[in-house]
Image (cartoon, rainbow, N blue to C red; front, side):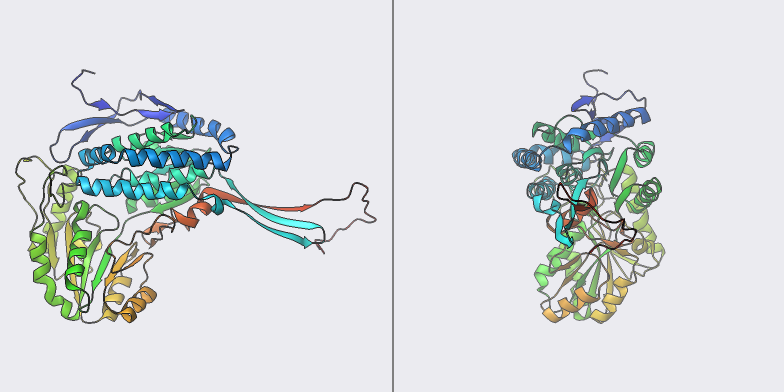
Length: 502
């Protein structure tokens, strides 16, 4: 490879960067310029097996490393991440396209999980009942599972891995991570920081690739648990394949999130938060509020919503003052623009059209401007599908009851928000809405790291989500021990063939 060629992304196996021997590579493209900035290998099955074998071997000693020592590694990692926010954010922006402030915010949310992992000792505590029967104690212990796997989407290349490996390895597991092939550099930087923090070789490994790699990780007999965050189609495949192979699986998948605006809400705050949640990261968030439900007189706010949205600045993520950057790829832009076109064909009104936008200085970027539809019906593609771009569907209802019924009829249950000044309305909403994560005057209700991510219905497969207490249950196996200790000279006078304990 010539000196001018883009860097080949390495695997990370047994504590070292390892060059893949594959013949299949994918270009990593800066979405604002189309510059090829790196090349991602599609690893072979043998290379995946090497990574899993390294993790399996490391588990033998890592599981017996003291919890205090594992926590110290996390403490060191959080400081290293804190010291490297800017380089990590720059790598995210270069390969994903989101603005630098948004990328820095992503690193900050990932850092929250690492900080939480520094303090999870109490989550691994068991329970004991002394003298559950005469002279018999019963107690439970949380033990690590073994080799865990994480498969992440492109939209948060630092935050999503942080939702997985810090908690898993702190609980004593070892790990194989497969990041998105579209923007892996920031993920690899994060893994390098984890190694610098003191992780022994083999505790954290990285492979790259597509369906073949994913399938091998799901099938591998030495993998005990799989955590996935990404699209519904892939997440459903991962869940079915890995559970069929006997793995514990969590799949956090697609969404169609709604933001309800009541007329008693603070108007400026509600509109600004709605716009920010819909168009931040160019709408490439599973928690983006892509549907606004304007209730009653709040329907009169639509012209102002459109006008404020029109003022958003679209440019490369490195441009000062940019509100949103490009979507991640040419294919993503084509899909978003196709869905925008389908809205008009199916009867919606496009009141703000972001197709064909020209960005000064970046003629080749994958830019789509903010787009707003009205007259949206549930059967339209722009409502039935997750657009994953800067597009906001507007729905109008007369009452809060109608808004709740409309949202509950959608199959997804990732997140929803309500903006109101009424405590009664907020409480009614949180009680009656059938969605896993609710924001009250909060536009993107991703909980802090010491609470679990609780998407529901079609947005989630598996009983346990990332972070918080649920992470302890997902990444550990509960073992229950029933113990009786006899005096040295004890002798039984009879054989007891019943199951009774007294």
